[in-house]
Image (tube, rainbow, N blue to C red; front, top):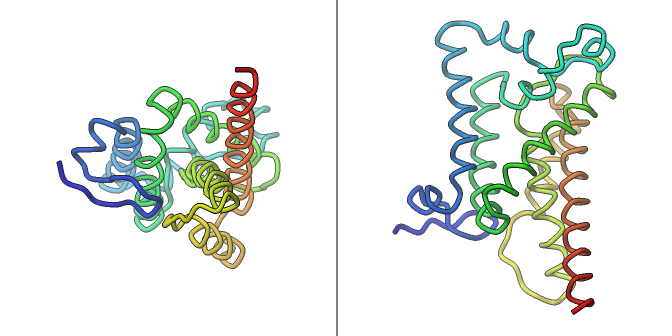
Length: 206
């Protein structure tokens, strides 16, 4: 089995991911397939209009609740989807073997739905992309990386500079959703905090 280190650690070789992170590969495949098909048939714009997350009052008034879900799998350009999928490959390939397939899938989808909800509340335009759920993964990794550093453990993970750079890009570029990225990061960080505290609680009870 080949070994290709990810930017957060672990192995991101395809053979390894097929066995240890099939959910990550499936999510990547779905995102790429949707983008490629919409691009080939010229339906990119229509797909964004029909499936992007709209302001919450419009979603509630129209009953188009599918937007909470579909917006996670739609992208607004080749660079958008490629960049997101590269980060997902590294983050999911690192986290899924640790969390387990079921927990990872639930965490990813629930985070994406929550990000859609916050985007619908705090933005006045359509928003699309997997980056909200992906930032939740980054927030999760960031929490445990910072805990490791506090404990004096050296880490080769690039999570801290990656998050800082991405948040700077988020602030500088108007088209990038600050609400989506920031809410995803906070959701992932808080989930990791809760998971960490619950584990510590179980250890103390024993």
